[in-house]
Length: 416
Image (cartoon, rainbow, N blue to C red; front, side):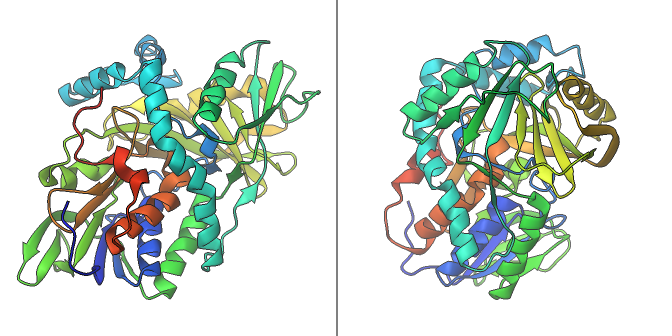
């Protein structure tokens, strides 16, 4: 690995989602001058419409036994919670084959062992941001998980037992009574304590404000097209602006990561797993998030409304919004809730989550000296963005070892 003689002074971060902004903020903690470039604006990728869970105990490897089979069963049904587009490209089929190779209990345990150090440090990283001036709150509240049949909670209990075995503090209990917002169609509820939630849009705006207040620049509407060495060192070439000079670069572009990272030696594919969300009216404000595994839907308090997020659509990252997916979420959750007005829908959204075939993010140095990547967090970029930024900034700006990042080497090829 290339180790600079001195820490970089100017760092360009490409991508203004949670991962990119948090990385920029923690680089500032080490004294770097940062410029954040984004093709659209703050949170415009997969961050803004995220459910907003800060749930480290649920941040697990996505490849798991049975998941791909579920997707194949849903192939002809665009309303299925996990849906594979029938017009898959050859690269997507290759991704799914590699994903299937990792969908074993042994691979899941290996991936969980890798993720656990990040999961354990995820919430403290949010506390660091708060202590450093990020004004948006995080809300601690249990996640209530509802199941329509007795015994249907066995799979989640088994998964969380694996999370606990890997070293996380899992606080799980069973409430004695089932009540609102669950309907009488819910037979069993699990309570997962020690987690938090946020309003992703509000939090990202506050994080961006903090980056600016500390002297950073955020340039929206600027799409990077290449990273190369110029007369004075590294530079980011864009389609719309003059080149951005830098001593170091971080690529944090989510599902668009391969455009810039593949020429830098990052060969592991990143596939878009598109998620949809919207907000709905409620008869009284909620105090805690709700998860419905049967529908693969997460609901989060959002002021006097709730955000509803769900589905996993394996499709092109830039495919148009498909209203059938929102209708499918509504139909799947309606029987299990009470006090939620699913005729009062606002803010429909779709965003491409960046998936890797082994379920692990890509964090670290590329083959080009001074250029790093941070992405591929799947559904957990909001939860793991700040800890990713904290660790990557330490790796870039100090000579301290950062063993937590070793499993996420962006140049890894062997995943099975």
